[in-house]
Length: 128
Image (tube, rainbow, N blue to C red):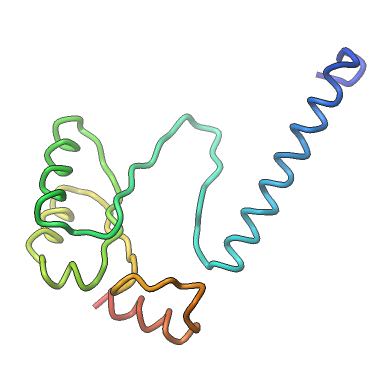
């Protein structure tokens, strides 16, 4: 739609919408730079991502796997290294079901509050 086709009342809305999208992109870039994390992905497709954090959990992870299987859905399980060490069978079960496993650090410290060296240590320890 060209500006000449808009009513005068639509112009502030359209300008605000464009400014809002621009501001969102700046905030997203700042989050990635400051926090070092991917917080969202813009797509042109109507998709949804299912993610579960802080597992695996001996009660809830099997329940989630059952629900996902019943609905032919896949998810990403962001696991804590400490929990994965306690429940290696569940880690294998999640992977065998075709879900993605993500690294959610070893024991979940607040990354903005710890130095980069400790962050890298958390990620490497969780990977092991």
